[in-house]
Image (cartoon, rainbow, N blue to C red; front, top):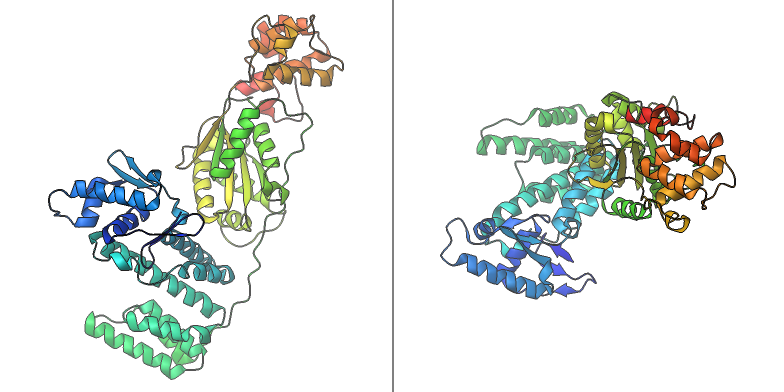
Length: 516
């Protein structure tokens, strides 16, 4: 469903067909709920917004009647949900034109502030194209509409000024002069607009007209507010007097990250099918996902498997940043930069700004691995990066949640265990047993689950609680021991499981290191 409030209040079905929402008060209710961006609006706030601070008696019942009529018009009772204390419109914020306008205008403003006018201009054009007239035009008599409409109008004018700024920097001064004059007529006290108009007139060779704009604004400010022009406007006036002209900006060549590479795996992926499906779904619906579990549970391996299948990886826009050895916020940003950029490449800006700029360029996935020792710094970094790069998703692995608003969690526990004294057929159904057998066959070819090995294998995986790393370390001991011997020595498991993959991180080479 699509809701429009930047003009008359309208609603459209998913197929684009218009929905007839009859009654001014019903449309006012729809607009009030839509502007809440999916949040609950209390009954008191709705009553105040629709009838004012001093409503007549019976307005709560009247509100319920409006809700019933709105549900009937929209055709779906679940679209307007009754929640504790109020109502919520079950429509995504991006499907409300005002919310989409704000998001695009903010992105355009950020690009303009960063100096990339070639990206800012189309974003601002798209934002302003959503307007069809005065916001909330047909429900302006509702008490909430005055404040909400004024706020949206202020955002529109600011976005227009940003657009004029971008077009000026691109050298398109002639194309915007008429629009600037029309806006200046309705907003004679906006000094930024006056300065932009003076710059455009001067660039068009109309120096006298630019100076006349300054004099007009100065007189209006003095007469209506009793103040002088701001320092910025006076600086523009001085530049016009001196005949200083701006040169159009050349397209900026933004630095881009090197193509992402995920580590190639030397072993097969065993089990975790439910977690694989869950994490894949979370990565589609959430922009910050954390795989949480104890050390040795296989968080990194699961994250890599999911990202390897993601479309961003096929385009070279998936990166893995190992943070096991990082313990400071500065070290975190430097680790990300070393993954994203070539050695010696140092674009301008702070380290965080460089990382944000390198991550631009479309949909991407950034994997931050082993975040537990700097979870606070990772949470702050993720918030700042995701705010500036709306097409990016971050997948973190950690022994604890990052505790950030909007974070989705995928909790990882041990692998499924077989029943005690299980026969080979029943034992082979266990993911923990299958992982042990897979790793055991790599170090002792021909090793299989049969009547002679079922008892010690089941004993091993149960006593190691199905922890994937512990199972792999135990399977590695089959190079020199039998399965019975490994099971017998598990009472001293820290000494037994003290050798493993020498290429792994130190914290994952032994069971003792994992616990440490």
